[in-house]
Length: 325
Image 1 (cartoon, rainbow, N blue to C red):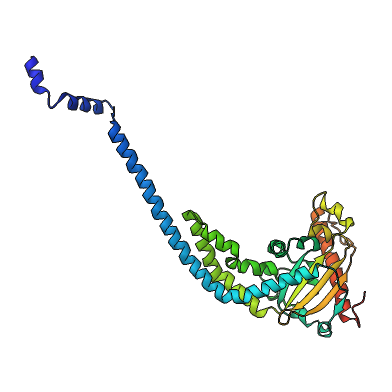
Image 2 (cartoon, helix red, strand yellow; image 1 turned 60 degrees about the horizontal axis):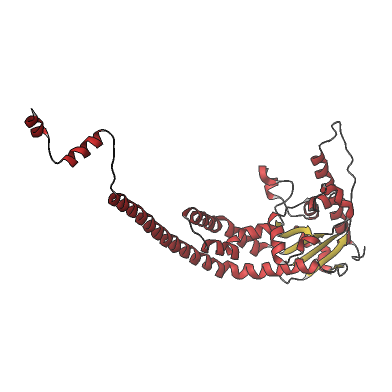
């Protein structure tokens, strides 16, 4: 019997033990095998990182080359205009120089032309061009520009859902900034700092959108815009209650009469053709059976009324023999 067991045993005892361990679900790694596996995994990670970094660098450099081509063409027109507009904003936010209306402005021709519009508080210009750009990105058109301008609302005439109450013109200055974002130093630096594939993909998509949508829009602005309408609101204590104890906002100011500076610049010559300082307010009188009680709706109605009253005062100054208050 012992001889039969000996004949049935195959190979060395160590091999037999290994087979029995595997059959029992056991696994025995030697130190050498574990070390080798670790080295292989670590080496694979390093190799992947090196390859990925090379690919990201190649992709980012290629995209930067395309961006530089755009900057050399579109940027040649946009940069000077941007700097000039920001200079106009900062200059107008300084000491007010008094009312002035050029004879050509009295015809009101600019009111039916395409142009650019920006409204912000005088206090928001503190900080220079960077502060102006930050506000301009989120700036909105309001009742003042809607009541003052006479640009035909083509979308509204056609009955399009997004036609809005007023014409597309003038464009918000923030639209011009958004359309040229791939020309900014921040965008270029962000692309240079890309360290992962997802971010690279995001920059690639942003560039594609810029080429297909934003840049053509920016070119349209540069070609068609004839004037720059700038409105600067001066803070007043009476508006503080409307800010609900927080910092002063444009919305709070528009709820109460306050001094407002209105400037119009010709883009071709950068000549200031209108400079006025007016204050206006209006009373909203409810009509009909259903009285509006929602505070937000009431506020919107009051801002609309005040802004249209301000537009009427500017209109009267343009039609009058002088710009004196």
